[in-house]
Length: 515
Image (tube, rainbow, N blue to C red; front, side):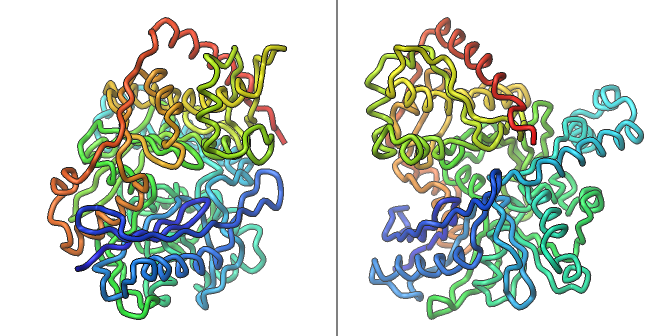
């Protein structure tokens, strides 16, 4: 019997999971990743540690199931996005990987925002008039995107500018053709293939802000604006396809898919049709909507990404992200010490009828979609003498959901689609209180499927389809099993009241950290 292995390199840890044809997990292994915080706003990881632990978990997952490399049909890779690595052609990283949570480039992005607005005023003229007749075309989509453009310090575009400007010798190596850049997927493919393949896929490329999802090319305007040489960037390949072979497990195995983690989760949830939505509650929360085969611009500061490109066909999505979810629950454990474990948050939040007017804005490293304020900071507001730790815990979980509502409200406006079902996954999605409050506040049905490692499942699906292990997407949908459904129970009047109070609270967090 053959199996498919998924290598899932997330923000906090790495998993290797082996699936059989019925999508059962045969074996898995996990290793945590060290988070490095050299300065406030900085968040790094050791690229060499990422590589070593990937190899370790792949070997352990085989050993746990008493399998050998020859039992693996194909490998699929899914990784955290926009975490950026530069290395020389001999394979030595020049700096720690800069993660998607890092905000060191906020001032660079603010400067570039101002520069772009000046260019737009000079070059585009009256944008509103231009958009109206073009809004359904690719040109119109580009124009809408430009009109709402705001560079994000979490992007690889900003990271790479900072690395080239601040790492000694980096620009010189780039000029001489001795420097390579990649997100984590590219770094792992390069290492797994012994340096033979320097490539990424469309989903990861589109999340870097270096890539134009409309023309399917590296964005020369942004490369010029940020002074980035195109020669250091990887080749962009189809999401389910050929990424070389690896011998690190003893025998040669084909790498048949590379996909960004959120896009992998969208695929793993079976969101193959336009309008279908998933929400991943991990370190942050990521809400994604499949918008079909045409690139869709956003008027409400969502991110227009490529979901995947398979067999010459590109699928697109709109995404909103809240960058503090699991991290907020960990903060309750590790920083405040008011709960002993992440699992306790559900019981404690359910032990009180409400948060007693306490609101928590999860903005430890700024506010992302749809606000994009890198200088915002987290706040707890509405405290009184009645406030107990249970109310604060509940407010933290509710704050995560309010951020999801911010995003979904923008998504419905952009897509013109009323969301009725959200497929939830990720570590924090095991929290029943969180998903019930999500159903209540968003007024949607929330589903949680049996397999919790949905990004890994999506990567395995793609690798299996590319290798012929599975025959069709319809076959995969049949194997998806819903474990629990959460239906909305809250009255509309109460829902509106609570969300209006949230809107007041979130405004208090804006522009707090201006340095």
